[in-house]
Image (cartoon, rainbow, N blue to C red; front, side):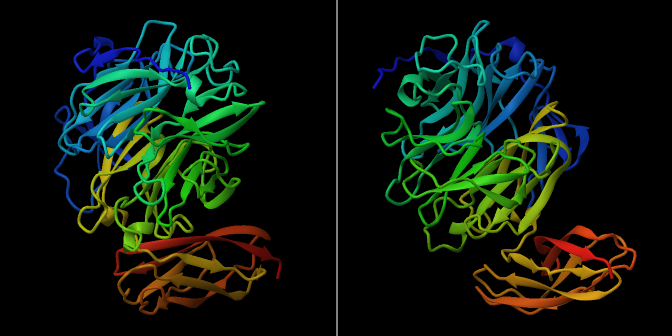
Length: 504
């Protein structure tokens, strides 16, 4: 193993005027609100709300900011890291990694500090935060360039080669106040690979099972002209690092999450749908990629997290996962948050946080995920990369219910006729759900009644027949529709389907 040398130390006081933080502004989902006191949210956090503020704004302190990373330390401090960029371009370039801290749960943010910035042509970018919850050490992984970025990087792992994109990280043992830097290219990069960079956002530490304590940071690598995803991992609190077997081709920026059954799920940027893979050996090897057609994606970085990472596998919320991305198949908009109650098999709960322009996002838990302590933080790019915005929300705002909805369409729906469509709802709750309703969102001119759903005990399902009337002038072909299950007048889950319309 290559011996690593600490590269430098940067203190919180070594902030640059060029990289000073912008004035935050209050923001409500989908629209800009009035400015507020610098560093403060517009209002106190109350249940059922999405509260937001800008923590970096293009042109204030740096021409551009991109690539959000977010975590909560063992002391409860929120750390928000991101790139300060001279242009919107990726590495190579004179980029720097900067950070803001919040010690009051995201209500106020301290002045922006520099984690890593050096003179041109050196650049550092695409941060990913990772907390060792056993030692308290905080890592921020990123790529380091001189002459080349991901696509131009040479093969090899010479840590002094300016044509090799390097794998660096910084670490802090004082809750993000000061940072030391390491280079681990020779340790984790197969010399046959070309470009390699840390997938931005947040890495994970396994909390349960055989590999408990393992730190996992995701990378995208380029091998023989194709892109793959791979996990870098450490079983000694970051003293040494290894990489597993790449999964792909078709890899890109990707995240991992620990499932309640001990597996690790990898969720990968891909169009028109996200792709997923699973590992039974703590992220060393993965199954081949498979599309998750419940997660549309325009090839944009997203986020996945375990909602209550420390609860035992028998806890009802052990299987809950949360996911965010721009839920479109083209362009970057419609930032959507989803909840799965079954380790990512279904994603029945979803809500739009921003209908307009948005891009990368990172989620992190603000509590332990149990009842009444279920707020989540999200750092994301807003308004065509003009802002890095911090938001927080809870389950009440999400407004969902753990009850996947499955639509079984008939072979065809003849135009001008009424055909029964089966919709199934299955409760994944630990308490009985009262009676509810299920309805179909259909194209203009179509009709279908709202149908009652009986009360459902935990694990119980029910099939409902919904008569769907297709207008006589409907065009033959495929038509998308969505089923909505509503219970208690405010909690909803969804299931998408495609109908085939035929001539009468």
